Image 1 (cartoon, rainbow, N blue to C red):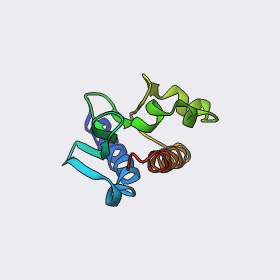
Image 2 (cartoon, one colour):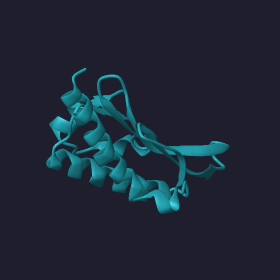
Image 3 (cartoon, rainbow, N blue to C red):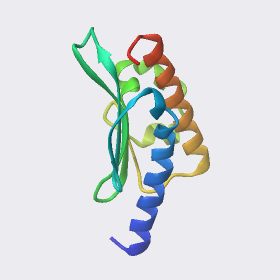
Image 4 (tube, rainbow, N blue to C red):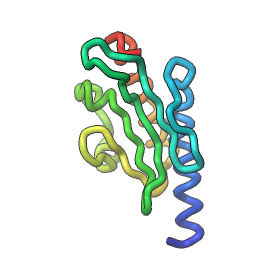
Length: 124
């Protein structure tokens, strides 16, 4: 990987981490390192465990953004753009080598809806 590609990954990670940090006051930060940022929601009586909310993590060739609310409530994905849908890997992970402002704003809005849904369902 070139120095420029690594810089792009670090920049992308910082931008994705900021989306999650907006919700950190009401969640639990379980990892905060130069290449990983994880948030947990509250303990769930329904699932009998602490609920994972989301994370941003630098991988070998991309940055992964995990958002558990879209796994728990797939209806949150209705209406997402084809460009964001294309970034999905599995049911709750989005992979980026870089991210533009438009997609960043869409992902931030999706994360906010997910946060609100977790709150509504007493998972926060």
